[in-house]
Image 1 (cartoon, helix red, strand yellow):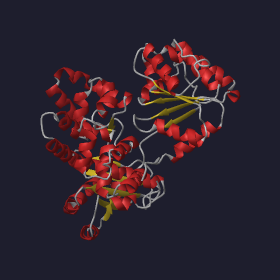
Image 2: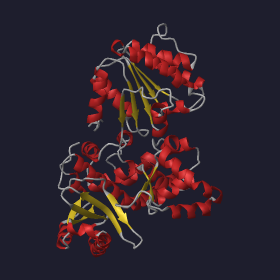
Image 3: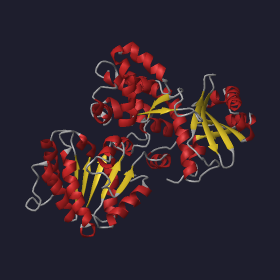
Image 4: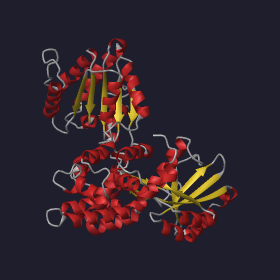
Length: 488
């Protein structure tokens, strides 16, 4: 089966609606690199029957490099050189955008956040004048402008900061996240065996980044076993993802945060104290900068998140740190080191080493996947547990650890979940799970009057495991149970 376009139904309809207006628009689309921003625009253009397009990927370079990229794009998209002369300054570039919009073209400027660089920033002032003129005659301007960005805070600052020239000029905004789990499962149903183990393996590695699944498809390994897929995607000279993280994540950071990122990747859920001790040991000079590093990774780049146990106050000191992106976590935690040794050790040994690390990481990956599925099921009104707030975990100083806590405040139901990759370990740990739940309820006695439910979750559960779990007055759930009935 040929590759298709998966998910994104709501976003596609929204974009097509913008394009069908056939009047001036200035739309912002944000999302991580490789998430499918450009592909979404291409699909919407076809759906809205818009053919005049100019797409430019803005390089992180001097103005001459940006102008050269624009000139190349104008040639690639076949623009009439006599009518649209390649600009020789940032001011002329802004005027070119306006001229193209008036002529009915859709202009897309990707990696727009680079205009926050000091040497490129004057473009935003020039563009402000053009945008204001186009907005004043919006009904007479059949074209529009998309600005795309992968560093969320920098792009938002260019467009929403009150002191920015382009403040309050955008007409539309789309935040593009990962494909939902139902769409990932649809990909597997069409191109592989959608077993729970494969879903967990690929989701833990790629989450909902459509480009990575398509890369697997084009390499012919989306249905292959784990070792074959890892070899093809990471360990060969032609592997499409061999330099992905360096090119699209870490290159942007220029090595400034490697120590922090690697530790969090290899120790998901680490505390500030854990991080501080590690930095003190391996890079003492950076210890004083740890707070600034974490703030930049959380607020500027959106790569790290600090999570608190459910019901904790925002300023509580029990926060734990995680990488937001599954691919970056898998790369830094499990894959990068074996790949770096490919010239010195047999590929089979290195692939086995990477896979062993990924299997261990799938324990935490399963918790994230289950939490995502609970939220997705609630959002789509599927299943038996409508959430009234984000699903979270719980931990305290008494060594209480609960993987998932789900709340339905309206019906006063609280559900506790434990997740294990192996069904046998899940069953064996049920007495401990029950003890953790009781300690939680002791700490929150007001919740004892609620309906309390316990669920035990593994990728696959056979009949024996289900009977043992049910006998312990716990609800058994497999990944197949949780994806059942989800519309893509």
